[in-house]
Length: 83
Image 1 (cartoon, rainbow, N blue to C red):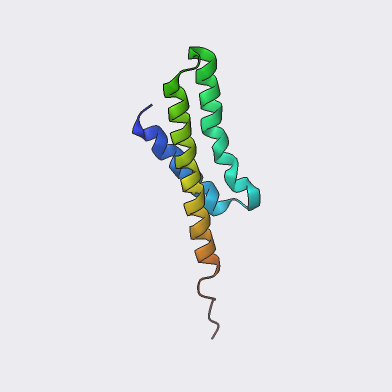
Image 2: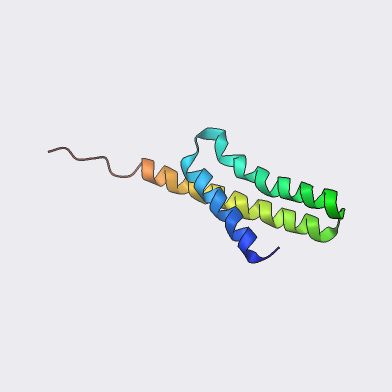
């Protein structure tokens, strides 16, 4: 799994963290879990699989947290000014 997969996990986390309401923000954590389950069923368990899963989950969670932070900053930003 190259770096592109981790970038995609981060972007999915960022997008959901920014746009999804409530606990739906954490849905992207299911993406690396589902892919790891598929790899586990096809190739069997290995230390590399679990290490990559942990990294993917951390990267995804970081994206969710950053997206939620950006969303919170946007909500408390400037109020529209009316003439």
